Length: 180
Image (cartoon, rainbow, N blue to C red; front, side, top):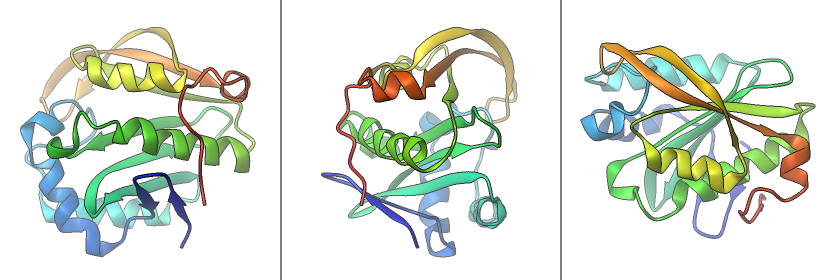
């Protein structure tokens, strides 16, 4: 099993043993409402199905984030030269810089080990903390678009962002890049 290690976190591939903690994190409305792809409420069965799906996906880098316990998920998914970054943190883990640290480690790993030349992402417009994470990592705003949010059961607007490999390597992201 491939593991990424930062100063404070351990990132590893999800296993069925993580299903309950994933469901607990995503069944919190304050977390789920900031995501477009997850259902709400979110159940252990949803987590188990998701783990099966990502375990079978060949073109994805999906990691659970641990600090004594599972605190979230970070992923770079999709084929081609511009995959997508997605992530979430359990509410109790907000505000500690964990996502910037975890996503920075995964981005460094992805740019070092795959032939991608950029990573795209999107943030709901009412989630400035998530946009700040991406800004710290060096992502630049590339536009706005309307999407359907499964958790909200309604349309929403997202800010789209992009980070090129060249920008990352030039040090535009201000995060320590460490992986083991």
